[in-house]
Length: 256
Image 1 (cartoon, rainbow, N blue to C red):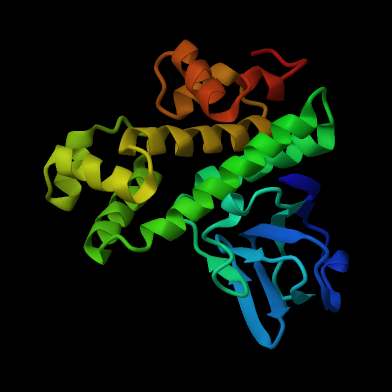
Image 2: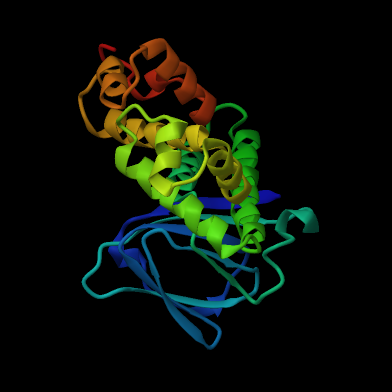
């Protein structure tokens, strides 16, 4: 794929857009507020957590939703291989409600930082992150064929993790919450989401850590402790494994 633009839209005055064909494929994720779209003859309102794939050439209009503050990430790109978009192109456009929203938001944020920063090899790194995002979203589209009972169980586990991610969490506790065996819970959650409950917990924690490191004066050690990590070295390891950079890249010049 060839990335043309990566945007983090958060300026209301730039949101109104007249109906016109898109020059490139667009994949977007709304992270705050509501966004009104018109695609051809179809109208829709996207809420926080909604995603949308718009193929190149689609007639598109966008407007500010009354009374709402909007924030949205978007990738504008051209595909070099039909395989990159296998599960997107069977419909005129594809509206998505990502199961793994927190991790997807983190990857969009990382992509935006990389694209804007333009550090050495940024195009290669950006393409890798963008392909990961495309793969994650399409894997969820494939998972829509999984029985609703399994998807509901995975959703209950996800909600529990999001609510209790700062606490020590064990698989036995998650299994007791949904009244299933630990092995069954782990198997179903991975089948639906592509990762284990423990991996998802770390993704949620690291997403929260990035927000805390960027918006507070807390040290890395304080953030690690607040998120349930007793060992800062292990927190640093998990952070780098998920984000691709150590947490210190957000705390340069500060005492950590």
